[in-house]
Length: 338
Ligand code: NAD
Ligand code: UD1
Image (cartoon, rainbow, N blue to C red; front, side, top):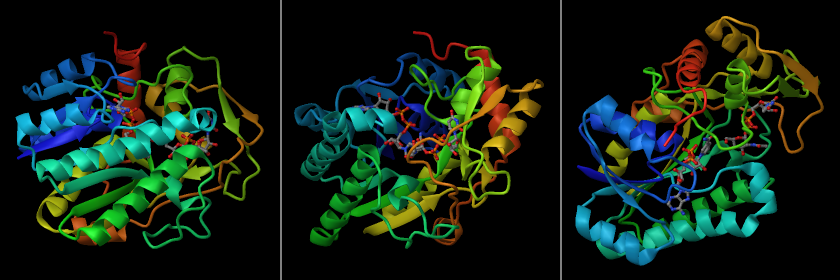
């Protein structure tokens, strides 16, 4: 089966391509390379022996997408393409809504013309805002988002919900990721943020490899066991496998399906620092700093629905997440080089 992967050159998309190929699915990639390097395709080929078809272009370009569908006979789309930096979304809301919301609408129009009505969408736990209780289930309240990035994800969820209500022959799966981290266990693929990383794990990895002096821990006065923020970190390989499980369902059943993709376990910032120190064999220097505006105390997933309905659950530990991140970062200290 051919599956179109928008944003397939990015962090989660590239790992998903590798796992798809292993599962006998043929990925077809569309990416405009605004946040990825062409070298990723070489790494996917080296790992799998397959060089996926790759169309360089923008999902907001409808004629381009139409021509991709005309050439590829894909049966489903996994839609990763979008912008994802929370801070940047506050200063560039037009770019974020255009890429994430408008880009999705253009994709949907092009899919409908091509008769492809099966979509898996990359949503985020950010749609839950500051949760009233943990673990978070799929029916927990959504919409109290705090920034344009989060609102763009929530808006797309609403667009897709309305589309399904109007055209119930679609199969639409919303996957709400918790905190994706880790890298391919080979060390040849991983997360390669441009500039100063916003997220915890790539920042720790860059401190450990000597690119940055120390980690700023954003607050140690939360109501959590050690005072630092608690999150549900999920290995990117588990996340990739979750997409394949979702595709099985999305490929076969019309409906609007919503799943959390997390591990169901919370780890604090200091838990992650300590696990990373163990993985790299040296202490990771850090200092306690004020809270980051907009951060929440704790967030982790209920994983029951995905386990029961997709037959999927995360299996990789925090030790594997940190070990694989360190292998990637130490083998590629400057990330992908084109
Ligand atoms: P990423 O930036 O590594 O990958 C996104 C890819 O999309 C990049 O390769 C980029 O070049 C491409 N892209 C962006 N805009 C495009 C456009 N208009 N046309 C074509 N290609 C375009 O990000 P990622 O971490 O792999 O995230 C993938 C998806 O998952 C995103 O939608 C993101 O919002 C969502 N998500 C990510 C996280 C996370 O922590 N990484 C958490 C929750 C949800
Ligand atoms: C952030 C985004 C969220 C997005 C997710 C995945 C915010 C407010 N939220 O989530 O919308 O879906 O990334 O991309 O940006 N931390 C530090 N020092 C750092 C970086 C982070 O102490 O340098 C702490 C944070 O305070 C938090 C934890 O580490 O407690 C995880 O942070 P991060 O990796 O940025 O993810 P989230 O804040 O959960």
